[in-house]
Image (cartoon, rainbow, N blue to C red; front, side):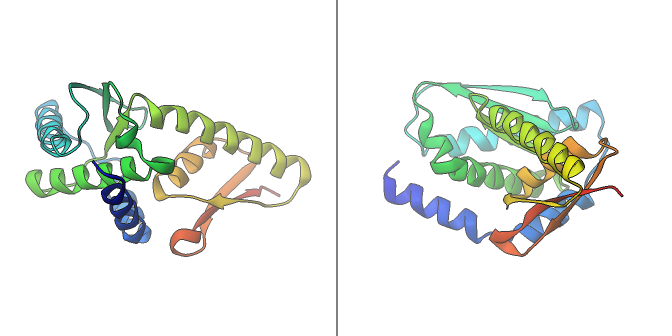
Length: 189
C-alpha cells in the first residue's frame, strides 16, 4: 500500500467521532454471548479481516484469536513486515480495527468488542498505558491534586479507566472534546 493511501486512512480515522465510539463502547459493556455466538463473531471478524488484508501487500499472515481480560475478542495478526498495518502512532491499526468492528456489527446485527492487534503491538501499548495510569495515580494521591493526562483515543482512555477502577485512592474522568479528550486522575479526599 502506498504512503498516500496510508495517510488517507489515518486522516479518515481521525475524522471518526470519538464520542460516538465511546458511547457505543459504554452501551455494550458487559454484553454476554454464548459460545456459539462468540464463534460466529470470531468467524465473521476473521473473514472480514482476511478480505481487507488482501489490499495490503503483507504476504502470508497468521491470525490468532483469544479472549482478552475484559471479555473482548482479540485477533492478533503475525507475519513478516507488518509495520504498514500499524501505521504512524498506530493510526492505521486503529482504522483497521474500526473497519472490522463496523463490518462485524453489520453482519451479526449487534456490537461485541473486537480488538485487532499486530504482533502484540496493542498489548505492549496497553502495558505502557497501565504503567502510566499507575504512575499518575501515585502522583495524584501523593500530591493531593488532579493529574491531567495527554489526549487519548477512546480505546486508550478505557485502558486508563479500567487500570485504575480498583484503586481506592483515585477516581478517573474523561474531559475535553474530540481529539483533545483526555483522562483526569482525581485524588479521593
